[in-house]
Amino acid sequence: MDISTLRQPVAEDVKAVDALILRRLRSDVVLISQIGSYIVNSGGKRLRPLSVLLAARACGYNGQRHIDLAAVVEFIHTATLLHDDVVDASELRRNRETANVVWGNEASVLVGDFLYSRAFEMMVDVGRMKVMDILSHATNRIAEGEVLQLLNTRDPDTDETRYMEVITRKTATLFEAGVRLGAVLAESTTSVEEAAANYGLNLGIAFQLIDDALDYSKENGELGKNVGDDLDEGKPTLPVIRAMAVGSPHQRALLRQAIEQGGRDQIDLVIEAIASTDAIPYTTRLAEGYANRAKLALAAFPPCPATAALESLADFSVNRTH
Image (cartoon, rainbow, N blue to C red; front, side, top):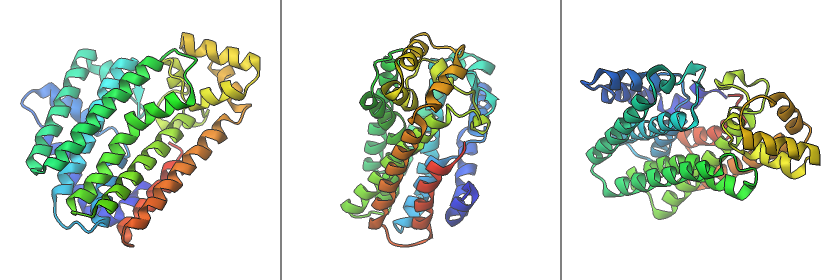
C-alpha cells in the first residue's frame, strides 16, 4: 500500500492541511518563507499530520480543528529537522541539500524557532487547554530525546535500552501526541484517548526502527540520504548496537572504533559486519512487534475507512523502502 491509498479517507483534509501550511509559512521576513517552504515542500511523507487526520475521523470528529492541529504537528516536526541538521552537520535530506548547507546554521536555527512559535500560535487559536498541555509536554519530551541522543554520540557503550529511550522521546512522542489529539478533538472517552496515544507511540517506534535499519542498506538511495549517515555522525543506532552484541571480537572492535571516530571511511566494512549478523532482521522484527501493538490498540476505534487506513499505516511503517 502506498501513501496515496492511505490518504484516501481524508483526501480533502490533506489538501486543506497543505494549503494551511503554505498560508501560515508566510512572513514579511522573506528568508523565513524561503527556508520554511524549502523544508516543508521537500517531499516528506507527512505521516504525522496524516495520523492526526485519520485519528480524528476514526473517532468521529466532524469539525475542522484537526486541520489546524495536523499543520501544528508538521511545523513542530519541521522545526526539529532544521535543528537536528545543524546539530548533526547533515548535508543531505530527502535527496536535497539541507537548509543549513544552503543558508547556513544561524538561519536554519532561527527559522526552526519561528516554526516552533508559529505552531504555538496556531494551537492557542484552537482554544483547548488540553491540546496545549499535550503539545507542550510533547515538545519538551522531544527536546529531552535530542539531548539524550547527543549524550550517546560517539559512545560505543550505548546499549539497546538507552537507544530505545532516545527514539521513544525523539520520534515516537510526536506521533503519540498527534494521534491522541485526534481523539481529544472528538471528545472520546478516556479509554479511547489512551488507545489512540498507545497506537501513536508504537507506530512512531516502529517507524524509527525501520529508518535506522534502512540507514545500513546499500539500496537506500530512496531514503534520500547517504548510507551510514548515523554512523558518520557517531550515532549508535540499533543495527550497530545489535551487531556489536552478537558479532565476533574483530567486528566489535571495528564497530566500536567506527562509533568513536565517526566518519564513513570504513562504511563498507561496517555494512559487511552488520549484514553478517542478525542485526537488520532483529531490528525489523522488533519494528514489526511495535507495529502489531499499534494495530491492537485500534480495537478501541469503531470500524470505518479511517480506522482501516490507520491499520494499513502501521503496516506501511515497517514495509516501506524509504
